[in-house]
Length: 104
Figure 1: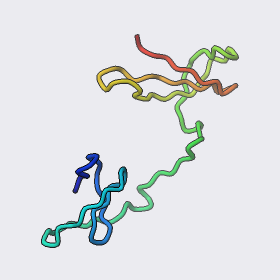
Figure 2: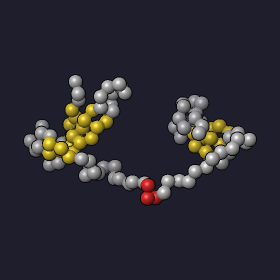
Figure 3: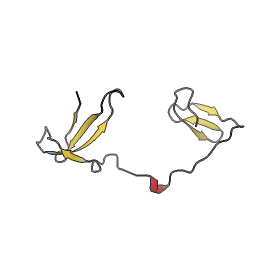
Figure 4: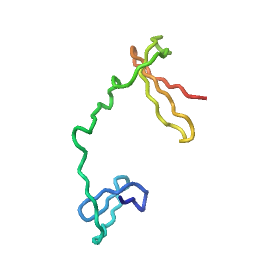
């Protein structure tokens, strides 16, 4: 595995070059080095989801401040520093209103 000297991201192999997927920096491969090639993921290992699909999210009892419904889908996301807790996001199952709840 090679990492970009410019930004530190993982490099991808393209013919005789290492190419950074983040910044585009290119570095020639060492012609004397031996590389282990792996197969791409099996199609059965890949889980496809619709980016806008909220139906896959778990549901819980949560009071919607917009419509008063007591059921919402939820997910957690790290939006602050890694040493702070995650933020819980809720999406109302009735009106699709989205709100968040922080641990304080």
